[in-house]
Every structure is written in C-alpha cells, then in structure tokens.
Image 1 (spheres, rainbow, N blue to C red):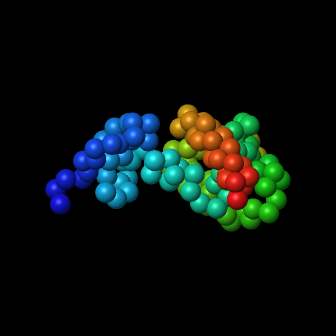
Image 2: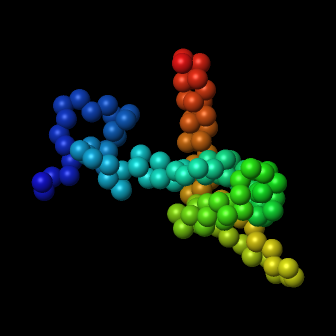
Length: 127
C-alpha cells in the first residue's frame, strides 16, 4: 500500500506525461483531477464562459444567464473564488458594486473549455 504510483509498460506519453497521472485511483494532485474540479458543478462552465469576456457584475451575469437563480449564482461565484479562479472586486460608492473577474488561473481554463465544446460536438455527431 505504500506505493501510490503504478508501473505500466506502455504509458501513452501524451495522456500521462509524468508520474502524477500514473495512479491506481484519482489523486487530488493529478492534473486531470485538478482541471475537472475547476469546471465541476452545474452552471460553472457557462459562468466561466461569460467571465471570459471580461469582468461582470452580479446583475449583469443574471441578465446573461436568466435561468440561473441568484442563490446558485452566488454559490458558484463563491466556489470559483475559493478555487482561486475568480477575483471579487468591490467598487467604492453607494451602493457598493461588486465585480467578478477571472484570475490568471481562471483564464487558463479557456483552452479546456474550447476543447470540451469541440469534443462534445464531435460526440454528438457520432451518436
């Protein structure tokens, strides 16, 4: 039980370029698990998509995703901020306005979202 990694004669170097992916079970430091955790949760990918265009206020995000409840939007924004993917900026004045923007880590998810869309479209064509 002391060994976390598994030996395998033919690891695909594109799929498993280093030891972090050579495990017998999902590990929190596996890059694939980290990426999946970043985009997990209902509405998360759509919220990330909207923030890719630039900083937004809460009301603006509600307008762009009208079927997303205020409660779930608040929860998703809080989760994304906890994951270090979204920064919360409070603007001075009355009333205080809050803007949300992607951090560098959040922006790094763009290629993943693009590829997920392309893969989903291909799967739909093959189904």
